[in-house]
Image 1 (cartoon, rainbow, N blue to C red):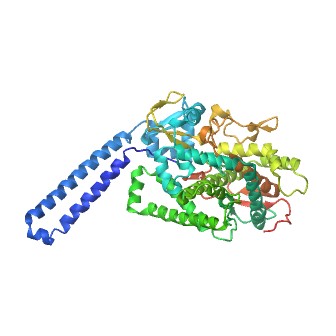
Image 2 (image 1 turned 90 degrees about the horizontal axis):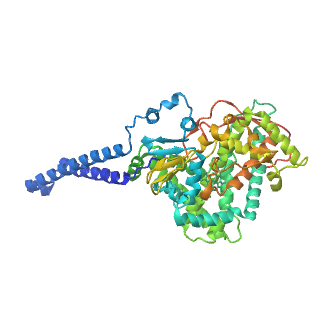
Image 3 (image 1 turned 135 degrees about the horizontal axis):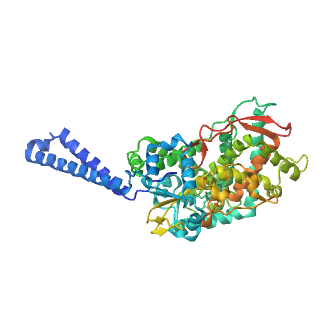
Amino acid sequence: MHLAHHSNSCFLLCIVIFSLFSISHLGIKVFFPLTMESQVNPLLQFLQVSIGYFLFSFAIAFSIFSLLLFFLRHKFWCTCDICHCYLTSSWRKEFTNLVDWYAHLLRNSPSQTIHIHVLGNIITANPRNVEYMLKTKFLNYPKGKPFSMILGDLLGDGIFNVDGDLWTFQRKMASLELGSMSIRSYAFNNVKNEIKFRLLPLLSSIAQEDFRGTNLDLQDVFRRFSFDNICKFSFGLDPGCLELSLPLSHFALSFDLATKLSAERALAASPLIWKIKRLLDIGTERKLKKAIENIDVLAREVIRQKRKLGYSNHQDLLSRFMGIINNEKYLRDIVISFILAGRDTVASVLTSIFWLLTSHPDVELRIREELSRIMQQDQEFLTFEQINQMHYLNAVIHESMRLYPPVQFDSKFASENDALPDGTFVAKNARVTYHVYAMGRMENIWGQDYMDFKPERWLKNGIFFQESPFKYPVFQGGVRVCLGKEMALMEMKCVVASMVQHFDVRAVAAGGDIMFDPGLTATVKGGLPVVVRWRRCLLNFSS
Ligand code: HEM
């Protein structure tokens, strides 16, 4: 996301409102001057028009002055090569996505840090800087106000959008819940049922003896799958999105729209633009407001239902939070953040895995070999314990996320002046971004073959080993490391294992580059059309 930080935006907003007010004041006086009062008193009429003109000129002069300040502060005129390339979008001649261009720049930077002056953004792929921001000097690099303003309407005070005490409280509670063994097996059973009763039957309904069958958008399937799962996990309710015959639930559609439009706020040249649109309730801001209203109605309904049914002996996350929190708005914010955390991230990784497997059938074969080593013959589904023995599969998932991380970059805003370990000066309030996508493609981290899809780089004597989270911050690292990592890995392993075990899935357009859509998580533009072929007959699938 491109969060442009403009500390003087509130000031500018006031000026614009002031200008609008003055203009309308003047307009009224100019076009409707013949009120009873002014007709009888020409002096009053003269005064009104003069004051109007004065206010109008003053507001215009002030706005021009503020805009000048704004442009000067944000260096929109910067002519350095990088800024010029950014402003003219000439990077498009050589690179498919902006993130690819950033990765190229960072690979070629001696400090692995670059500065996009026109965005006021320091971008780094240096693991020492990342460790410093996320762990050593964590308190100096909070999410910051610009981020929480952009996502504030959607996420409220949910864990993703807050710092300080609000964050500490939710973090403590959520880690207790997500760490417990009982919630893990509850999550595992949910995933298993969604695969067994929905995902596999759906794939078998379109699978053929050869690859000439119907195209299926796998990205859409995975988004529906992970939405069902995260709703079951978070609310204990099943939206049933994976029934392709059913339209996507109202909630899912509103959620899609709200995340997309919130991310687009960050793409605006200045936050002023979306703030004015929000103030005037027009365009995308109007749509965003409507989508959030829909989400709110449904979230309130979910909470009401839970209260009615009783939640004390339920295992879902909402029930657990409800045992402690009584504030409805706060509960809504917590739940929305969890949906955001667990839905598109998982779907994004699963999509890129099947994209990569299409051009690496050797890797698919090795997953099958591992499966047949670990599973009993005729065993239908992996057990929780067997999942942990799938070292090669784990390596495949990590390698896919190295090349295609679902959260491509993450920004923090410095509380105080500081210097990063590579010597880069960071001014108070400056935005610093660590670039996860670029870090997965750095030669000095991964070696010369950094562009190759090689799950073996994650194995030592056949055993999976974890890379430092500061070289590989796919789940972030340090103090705010992802709390759902284990759950996400379990879910992704179950899906890949089951699909690879029973089907050959091939992306229709294999090879080449993936083009991403703007959003909070990496989304393949146009989806991922695939064809599906049977591997064996699955008579025991019942929906
Ligand atoms: C492949 C899947 C996933 C990836 C790559 C991922 C990645 C991340 C990242 C990068 C962050 C930091 C975001 C930020 O601070 O801006 C994060 C935070 C978080 N994730 Fe995940 N996540 C995944 C799945 C999940 C799932 C399934 C859950 C929950 C069920 C979850 C729960 C959380 C929570 C609660 C946080 C907030 C931590 C905090 O701010 O203290 N994540 N995740």
